[in-house]
Every structure is written in C-alpha cells, then in structure tokens.
Image (cartoon, rainbow, N blue to C red):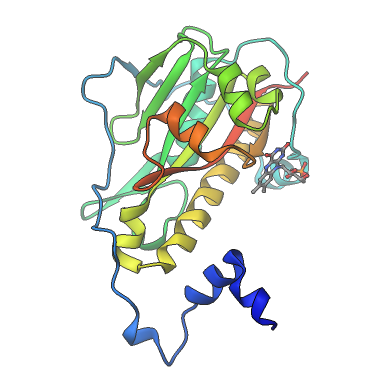
Length: 247
Ligand SMILES: Cc1cc2nc3c(=O)[nH]c(=O)nc-3n(C[C@H](O)[C@H](O)[C@H](O)COP(=O)(O)O)c2cc1C
C-alpha cells in the first residue's frame, strides 16, 4: 500500500480502528465519556404511536427482499399514523428487556443503541407536519419543530427533491459516546453499522406496507445537524430514509 493511500482519511480510519492480536490489549482508552442510553424531550408535546392495525400476513420476508427497490417518486397521498408507527417500530422498536438493556428489532453492538431516530413528518394523516423525535422507551413522538421541514431538508440533502415529496423522512443520528465510550475509535465503525441495520429494517417495513423508500446519506452534515439541533460532535447525523406512497 502506498503511503498516500495509508494517509487518506478513509483508509487511515480503517487502519487505526483495526483489531489485531498484537494490540487488542493495549488499545487507546476511549476519549468520549459513556453517554446516557436514551434521549427524551420532557417538555415536548407528545403523540402516542398506535400499535394496532398492522395487517401484514402477506408480508413474507422472501417477497420483501425480492421486491425492495429504492423508490424516489412519491404520490402526494398521506400515509397513516399506523404506517408511521410500524416503520418506527421496525427500525428501533423494543422487543425484549435484558437487565437494563431494552433490546430492539435491529441488533446493536454491545446492546448500546447509539442511534437516535428523528422524523420529518410531511404527509401523515392526523399528525401535524413537523420534526419529531422518536422516544423508543415510551413509543411516542416528541414534537421538536412545528411546520413542514421538507423543503429545508431536501436542500440539506444536496437538493434531492424527492426527500420533500416523501410522506416522511426518517433521520438517524449517532450519540457517539454510547459506542465510543466503551469501544474507543472502533465504536465509530459499530455505530455506522447499527444505523444500516435500522435503515434496512425500516425499508423492508415500508415494502411490507406497500410503501416505497430510499436511503439517503448524501447530505450537508452541519445543515442536517442544525435541523436536528444537535452539535455534530457528541451527536451527529448519520443517515436518512425518505418513505411514502409510490407514484
Ligand atoms: C449508504 C447508502 C447511501 C445512499 N444514499 C443515497 C442518496 O443520498 N440518494 C439517493 O438517491 N440514493 C441513495 N442511496 C440508494 C442507492 O442509490 C441504491 O440503494 C442503489 O442504487 C441500489 O438500488 P436499490 O436500492 O433499488 O437496490 C443510498 C444507498 C445506501 C446504501
């Protein structure tokens, strides 16, 4: 490998976060303090998410895997609150408890769950447009910003206008200390992998509901961080998915 290649930030990251037998016991100590395992916004108006009406008997996993495609053309029609609830549950819903860990639909390195889910609600029946935080513990939405954020969001996603046309855009951030506070730099790899599991679950759930979705990772980081009101250091935007009725 040439020296230039070694020094490129992406390669350097992979090299510096490798585990190998000679160094596994002498790794650098984590420089992030372990972070709180859950986020909540106590002052925010809450919307309870419904757990009913998930009629998914036709949703065989083989069919869903075969049919899933990235969809970027959305109908103007609204999705239901039940559909949104199912998407959120599929991504990060609590399915069991082990000690203090709330185990979820998606796996997480060390059961640390560094990923937080936010939703830009743009076209959902009986739910006002706005930016919400998904509280996994209470299965509620917490309203952070009133009013549709679609246009602003699409601009932050490098002008990808389908983000605005979607019914919702799920936004995933990482609370870095949750993972790096335990695993050091290697935790940076794990939190990216965690986000990918969550996104795929949500996309397959969309397919099961007859909706379409597209993952989106091309964005101006600081603009998305500003929309989410997070600092980009302790918590930073990682990934998103635009989901809605197919056109
Ligand atoms: C990590 C990741 C980031 C992506 N970011 C974008 C994006 O910003 N915009 C977009 O239109 N598609 C994005 N995609 C979707 C890919 O273009 C798409 O998955 C690929 O073309 C394969 O098509 P398929 O998903 O229909 O199988 C992304 C996919 C992944 C996995």
